[in-house]
Amino acid sequence: MRILLVSLLALALGAPPAFAQQDLGPGYVQTQFGPMGPAGRDLLQKVALAGLWEGPAGRMGLEKSSNPLVQEAGRHLIEGHTDLDRRTVELARTLNVPLPTQPTESQQGWLDEMRAAPARSQEFDRVFANRLRAAHGVVYKFLATVRTGTRNTAIRDYAKVCMDTVLDHMTVLEATGMVDFDDTEAIPLALVAQPSSAAPSPTIPPRAPQQVVTSTRQQEDDGVPDGLLGLGAVVVVGGGIWLWSRGRSSRRMHP
Image (cartoon, rainbow, N blue to C red; front, side, top):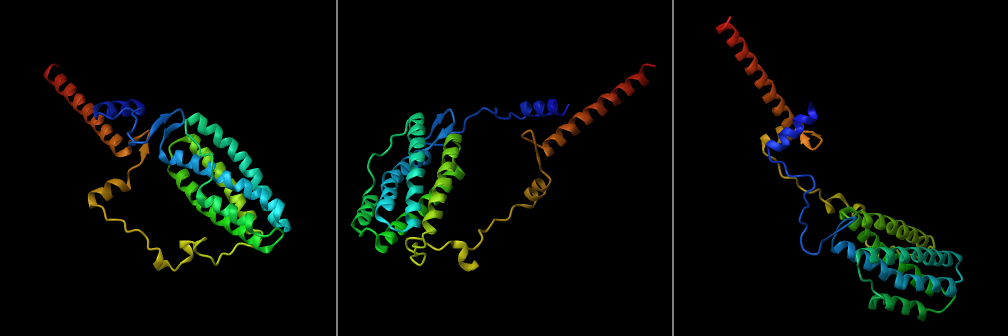
């Protein structure tokens, strides 16, 4: 009965069909995994770029450092980006996204800085740990933003794998003991670490009293608010009483 009432109310009120597609604007295309937008393409390309310099950096960590912790971080970088590179190429081919083949100018500069640092030196270890840790921090925030907002299930799953890999890399880089957290330009302080006045809560505008009363008791049931169901029920009951009253009147007039 409840399902029938929901269906009748939806038809009566002109409810939009469940399969209606929302226009998300320019730059979006529909895929078998859901809408694919600029952020999803940017994600694939940025992860590909990361692999173009972090893989070689990991190999330098193995070859140029005498610190076992730096060498361990290098191994994690190599293994992590070998896996991510494969996933990135496969998903980019499926979603028809072109990928870069050369690192950016900044990334190439970080690699050159590592190559210029003397082997088996603390200078190399510091450059290795700090450049990679700072870059991973930026990428991690970007991944979280895309993962939160994308409606494409394949991109969501891919972003989750990327976040796990990047977090692993950040952890092993920090374990070297060479990361300079006082360099707040490369690794900014977290906002929640500041006094509460630095991060004021957003102001929520008050709603009209009628809106407040309506929303406090409103719940969803199969996509239709209970208030609407209640209105439908009142209509049905009222109609039944009216028909019953007419029947009694008719019987009195025609005994």
